Length: 302
Image (cartoon, rainbow, N blue to C red):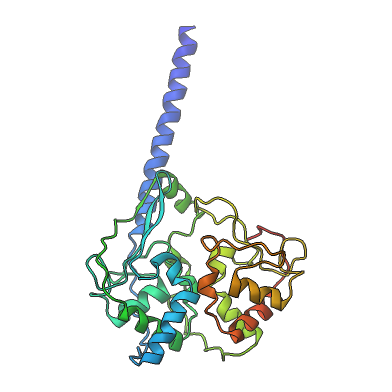
């Protein structure tokens, strides 16, 4: 009996040692990725100063999803706060105390938005720059012009930190903590898409949708985000769970009024339709045309 207990103790001790060794490995691997330095020289983008461009930038701040994380005043705040996953905050974009607006150059804004990298060369956490990497210079310039015009808000933002589960999910590539890793920072700038009711312009606009609805736009739970149903919807033309039975007018009403074809309401906390309601009719029609052209997928095949 003593011999059996001895061997059980040895086995248990070995397992504990292996677990500790694995956790140490996860910690150092995650730290290496979180603190990697990128040497990215951002493209020169003209930042306009006229009122019309700033107004357009304000609209883009809403329709491109910036307001969802950084709030209407641009002061940011908590995005994820979970003991196991970690604490990840949206930056204060203003020039107030605790904000980056007073220190950022135009190049810093381009680097952060298009490349997901801060002014020191470190990757930004959960900044969806893969969705903004293809934004054209005109839209990016207007967006930056508006951000620079935001009134200062004094709000200190707590430092980001990853919990044990968050580090494991990062190392195993289960959560998109570092979008900068997914971007080809040396790729040439894409050719600007001409605005119009075309699938091509709809695809340009739909870059914003992929962050929540997934690369295939079929929706479902967002990996690594502790949320409860309802999850992002299926935007593909699949008949049973997607938009296959919707009309363009149904889609327009959903975007403009937050109403589904059956009369039920979209929760603005889950689907921020009031922000997207600021899209033009041309943009909504182009987006609808594109969504109808993507492959139909069952719900949740992100």
